[in-house]
Image (cartoon, rainbow, N blue to C red; front, side, top):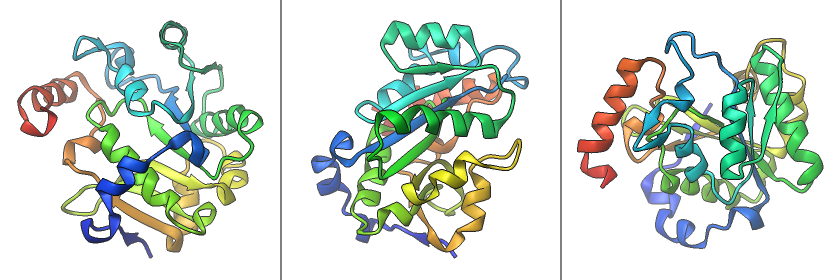
Length: 226
């Protein structure tokens, strides 16, 4: 059964001030391998706040041991332009993206205690929320056996990103064909901690042009983003 981090026990302010992702050895796989069939074009390159949408993920994950995993040569070029580590591949399955991301990071950062799997299409996710979740994870003495998952602040509905402790890396590298990390989450439900987002829109992904337009309106008009 999942537990939930509440404002009373998450110690948000102090944990964010002291947060040092590099020292904490936290990895991050930015998942950018989808074909965006519902969007109609490469949504990660769509404009958001004057830059390609994927740049929002670059800003949020700064300081983490990260890699963008993609099948798009355009996304690869964008990452190279901004100096973001990128792995271009041609494998079709979600399980491939997870495996390739970990296999890219682990030889470079073998001491990683955990790894965030972050979709590249959640432009309203804030760095403060991600840092809060990572800091709460790092505060756990047995963090390598923990799974932290962002959730909707009112309902507690789970979403992304998800932070897996190192104990689950081998399972993530050998997922059933075509499946994602949710398989591991379900298998170890008693180890899952839900971390509330600070705004419901942080969990929204830009699946269609209409949703992207809605996200832009929230970003422009909601005082949370000012």
